[in-house]
Image 1: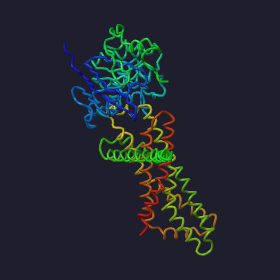
Image 2 (image 1 turned 90 degrees about the horizontal axis):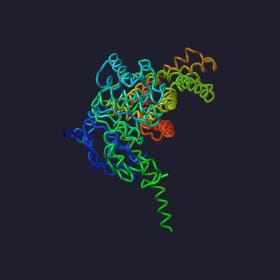
Image 3 (image 1 turned 135 degrees about the horizontal axis):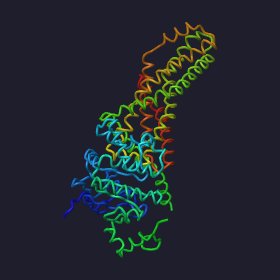
Image 4 (image 1 turned 180 degrees about the horizontal axis):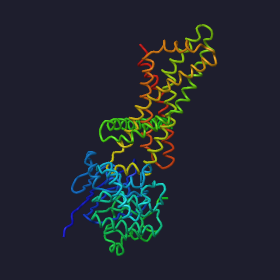
Length: 255
Length: 263
């Protein structure tokens, strides 16, 4: 069965000053697929995800979401596209002036005209889905632990039932057990929604667990992609070095 | 050798110039975008009222004390300069003119710039470096409409109100010194004040206040919005917001005075 292409990226370029960060990225995401982009720190993973969301403007190339070109479009089309997307930020990026449930229900209240009472009921329900009790709904984000903040961020990302969800280093900064809990939640919520997900991470345990397909970004290009099974069989020296976590190999680390 | 020297010299000159021009362009683009979003819905009225409370109500003690002592010191200084001949009416009118035209708007604005401009830059800057502004965008909410435009409207509307209250308190400060320290007749002092009351003096002060309020909010938002690089970046944004708004306040104070009173 042919799968529909959800996101298609061609020859994507982005530089900051003299530093070329994305150097011709080509990537396809099929509907309902979970793609994990791996790569070292500073290889442009975050820049890639921000370009797809229109938070950064690429220097050149094409990004098509549902066959709609996003590069060079006016802000209205990009804003409309955001209603199809959800994003879990690395640090949570919860609004610290709002309570937990107001964070989770933000999009419902601000943009979808849901009244506060109903929005809170929905928010508490989604919080329960990510394993948080109703008692924390009225707390502020600063009163929560890192793992709880991630869960709230996840709840905020999925409450509008987006078709595409982005995860920016979802397990970074968490202990291994909490990381696994978050992995499970990601798989679960993506499956429930039938959403297409794009995750960027350098946590290989997490990548193996949540990925249908893995792509490796190095020096602004996708240098390898394949399934998790392919990952262990590949003889690509860059990928081998990365998954073994070795300082010796073709990837030199700039200190 | 000499060419090398000239090249280094020109480079040292050119680099800051280019940087200055590019940040000027940046600022202009920001201001245009910010003003555009001030007039295009959706409007966040709740956030606007929260800012009104922050900028206006909570600045009252600072503005009150500042203008009170400004009025008092003007009365005292004028007395030591003009003592004797018709001291009462001279002091009353000097206090009136200097407080309503200059001291209340400028000093209040500088105090509010320190209080509010810094707070805005710090808050928006922190939101920037913790990706909360990106999060707003991904939640289909325009950060200009959500963060910037409520602050601009609040600054524009609240500062004139604050300064009007400051006018009254400043004149009262002059009265207190005139009557209780210098021993003038209260009725004569009040009469002299009202005799010299000119609409244009007060209006020019309030126009200044509106412009200053706009500058304070704009600088706070701009430097916060553009801040990068963690805690240090936010610290820089705060400093830049206060310094740039203070300087702009003094420059625009001159320009507006020129507009109203030179002919």
